[in-house]
Image (cartoon, rainbow over the protein chains, first blue to last red):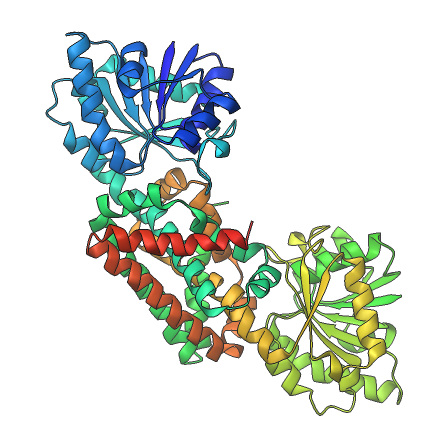
Length: 285
Length: 285
């Protein structure tokens, strides 16, 4: 199958690697606005050709939209428009892999070609970006969310499910609004806490050598997401604003509860907070 | 050399493993207040015998105090007292491995046997605790801090340096007060942010299956330290209270800056915050 990857970064690039080596994609066409990233993706061998969006849509059966969600919001209607032009009963499928789903879903809700779009979110990634961050096996064993599948044509959903099955992902079905609430709780807030932690340490600790020396594995782990790219995260923050604000407010309450317990030398309160937090062990290994 | 490990948890146990297999410790005596942990440490083979504190001090040349810092504050003077009783010119050495250093250093500053104590902090660990969490190679390549070494006898410092060299650690010299400031910035705050993150997610997300499903590697990494034990962290929080409060206040400013930028849909401000935070990449791999 001819597969188009629009946006040759960590996610698109990693999909290209596994879809090719596992025999799902015969020929992979890439679309990439950044010329350095495009040249690198070709040189690394992630894609066979880099073409423009229109050519990619025309030549591919499956299109994976793996750009930051702001760009996706602009490109998805263009792709569906082109589906409509090429073929009245278009058999092409476009899916996105963005971290927020509600605005994208709303943007094309009434599009005549809506049924050829499948909204998805593979729960995998690293803090690195660009085609050089792509890696085999990134998706193995993780969950992938498929949103509002009743708005998509069963044949389109089936193709996307098949693709995720080849990537060894577990599908979870959810509506777009719920997705955005839950990812705010579980994913988006942890990026904000990590960015804020990096800013705090860089602000308080003027001697970078101290950070390097004193950073145990724990600090490195907690601050890891602070390396994540602004291009990806700025549009997530604005598109999921309301949910994110709600979670930040709860988070601020928790940090303030810690602050008060420490300020009061209240060992019982500190212990209760820590032991309550420890319950996360039951869920996350 | 007969080596005494007082507190058979992650740190003490991991030291026992490497000090034995690398030929530094001939016989390892353990002291452990918790009877289950003591039995496990013997069964796993971390130590040759479990004895009481007095016997351990009398029979060992080097004593590693690897208990939570509240207990260390109580036990260190007892150990130095016993040094004084056994031998007027005692050649024994005691070191601690606790995460806060100033109160311990103050507690024995005028002790007649102060020179036989070396204050240290190996910058290594995991979020797990107990003798079953002990592992080989935990310390390899990490930094270890030696505090106020001018208050220790050169022979005691030399022995401890030799021990850390065998554990493949890089020594860094710092006074106890500076240590506590810098670890508040780099280590203690990241535990608080992680505890608060776990509390937030457990509070907002009532469906634990969603947490499990939606947690990508990023969330797991950021919340990892929230599994850390209250026994270890309660005394750190109270002993390093002032430094921790200062860092929490800066951290709250940063989270609030994010909150405001998101609330205002201020993409430029969000981008600036993220790109500033990204500078951590220069320091932490």
